[in-house]
Length: 68
Image 1 (cartoon, rainbow, N blue to C red):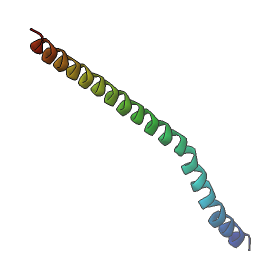
Image 2: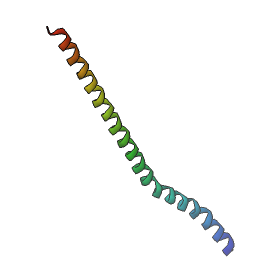
Image 3: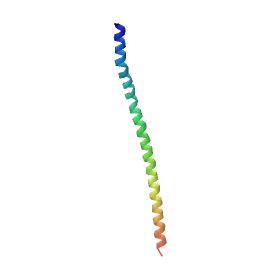
Image 4: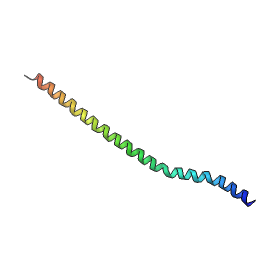
């Protein structure tokens, strides 16, 4: 009898413990994803600023060529 009760308790509590362990890791995963997104965003921002600088340079060059 005790064995069957213990078996039932293990079957019920086992998945709960597994779920709690998985939930514990979720904040870490979310934090890592946020860091990756921030890095990607920062890199994209740098690329955009570089492209703006290139376009600005091209516009200035064209204006200088147009000026007599």
